[in-house]
Image (tube, rainbow, N blue to C red; front, side, top):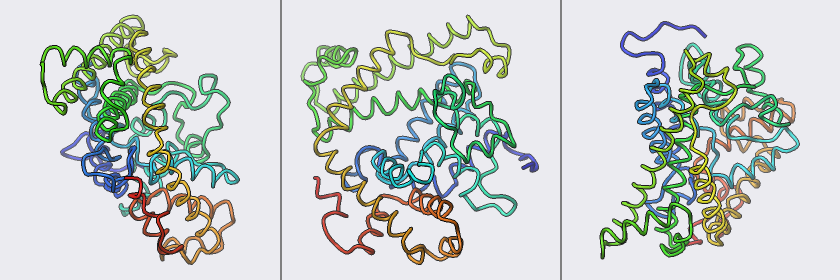
Length: 378
């Protein structure tokens, strides 16, 4: 909805600030990135990951002469819809919501931004600009049309698009594309750090990973006897620099080729302009494959995620069965709802939980036991 512009901030700066001051943003501090927050103080959480993404996005936008505030706003907002326990929690909610349209963290982020944050007197959500909402929805590419495949547009996004078209079959603006690849740069490199810190794999295991092994070897050769934490940090720093510099060079090449005169022309190109080169894309895929096999599918992580899925599924069933288990305002809203609407409300409530709160709620409803103590994986 229309509202007066700020006297001290641009529209995109106000978007960024509203995201930072939101309840959903604060909760990211206690939501899983890979490891449940109880496992250690130095592993990434959803919040620290988001801040790292925002820093990279802002630096990239500055180097490309894009709008830094818009890139930062999209980066800060992009994970607000993640439920507790990371992708395990999302998988569990999607399974529980399968009869009711499923669950997707990208749609949930959109629901947070347009509906679920209830802080302002004049509107629900954060009333962000079209550009920021478009960027959040499409930061990973089109979600309708040929490039999106046969995936159905989530209902919340489709309803908004019917009134305020977001061009769902096209690419987002350059700032959102920057935020998406800043996300890739951040989580792939920092998952190396967290995986090594957790002893899920050893330095030697990285030797055969393209680009990664040579960079670690280069640092070790240049600094003989360097202590392990500094070796890891210096190597990851250089890996990130390689990725950033490659992205900037490839993006400038694509901009020179397409020569868009404005944001509308850039969206009309029909392909992303912010991208890695082909060789870097191959390196990136190889690193993701290594992390998937050696980290995300590690037995310790699998045991943790199995318990996390059980907690989320149990909570969903418990709230759907007895709405009085929901807290006051949620309980009142749930009264008389049709089953589909009730299921969506329950999913909204669970998605907003932190890891710790979800475990406490499960313990309160189902009693004590090591199922709700994910620290037993340590």
